[in-house]
Length: 363
Ligand code: OGA
Ligand code: NI
Image 1: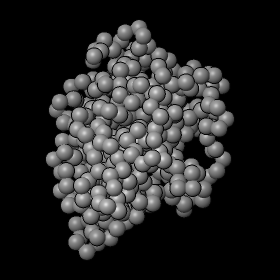
Image 2: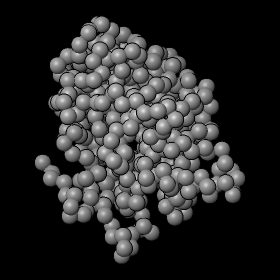
Image 3: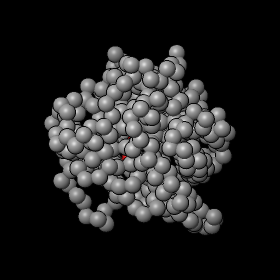
Image 4: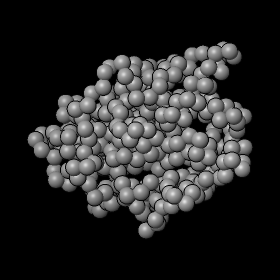
């Protein structure tokens, strides 16, 4: 099934970088969203407002203050589905270099990038555009390179060999963010009343996919999106962004921009976390908006259990008052869903829900 002929004719597409470099003054019709799905960019909240709580991890080593961090994480996960972290232990030189080399990658000529192009969602390294460029009814204004990243020694040889520093710079960031993920999962398990070493081996040996996203300046940011509303499939997604554009949906069903905070990373709960917590925590719905001024880059590190490993609600979180509300599912199951469905028409998490009121109509 794996198709290694990356440069096959049918994989060819026009990247959004190409469109932006052409200097077009309107977006092609294929990018124009139906009015109901268009972003509302004029709502700029006051600068002190933050869509997600900001959590300082520096007190984790201190046993007294550690419990305060766990409490903050619990509130953030329950009420918001995510948070931002500072003092997370990843040095700014690593985040800067990862963003720099991401930028250099997307600035390369088409041919160099197209060698990695594939529409096969199972490909461990894949350059593409939109979400699922073959299936998307509307195209999204995003180019991406995604690559499997854990264990890094298995995958790094397949990563882009140009720019020449890509593997080193992106690799250093990938390794650092993997450690941060393990640390965050320990805190989250504690916040759920589970042992901090719950599923430790499965988490450490889990899948990590780096999605390196490029959203070029868009001539009509009010008509298009970089990514449509969706939740991520995994446990946690850790996002590094160089400027605003990410929006999360609040409990009031309103979109809130996630501000860029100096040296902070965004942490979002994914569908596997919702399943594992038996619905105590919900995966967060988010999207990426565009702007007409500047290209935006983001690096989303998507963590889940290993590709074939099914995740079910933690037995300690299932009792008479909280019957198991989800069927088990794996990253592999999600990929099948992604290749068979338009993600705007249904969420993967809804296919796993067992309550009668949210039965997903499989096509
Ligand atoms: C993603 C994602 C958001 C962003 O890659 O799944 O939601 O800001 N990215 O790029
Ligand atoms: Ni996402």
